[in-house]
Amino acid sequence: GRAAGSACRACALNVARMQVEAPIKTPDIQLAPTDPKGDEKSDKGKKFKLLLFNDTMNKREYVARILQQSVPGLTAADAYLIMQKAHKSGMAVVGVWVFELAEAYCDLLKAGGLIASVTEDE
Image 1: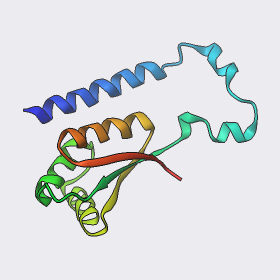
Image 2: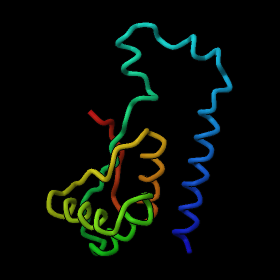
Image 3: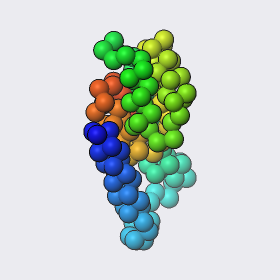
C-alpha cells in the first residue's frame, strides 16, 4: 500500500539523519558560538511542534487513521484524541520533535490529505 511506502520513506529519512549526526566532522564543533545565550538557542536543541488543523473534507475516523499511520508510537486512542481536539478547537498539537522528524511526519500527514504544519516550539 501507499502508507507502507510512506513509512519506509520516513525510516530512510531517519537513517539518513542518524548518519548526518554521526560525529565525523569534529572541527565543526569549534565553530559553535561561545556566547552562553547562543549555546542555549543552538538549532540541535530546538524543538518543533507538529500541528494538525481541522478540515471539512476528511471523515474523523480517516484523520485518526492517517495520524496513527504517520506518527510512530501514536496509539489509536491518542490519534483519536488529537483528531477530536483539532475538530473542536480548529487545531491540535500532534507532538514536539526535532525539526527533521516534525517535518517528515508533517509531510506524511499532508500526503494522506490532512492539513498540517510545523512551527517552532516556544
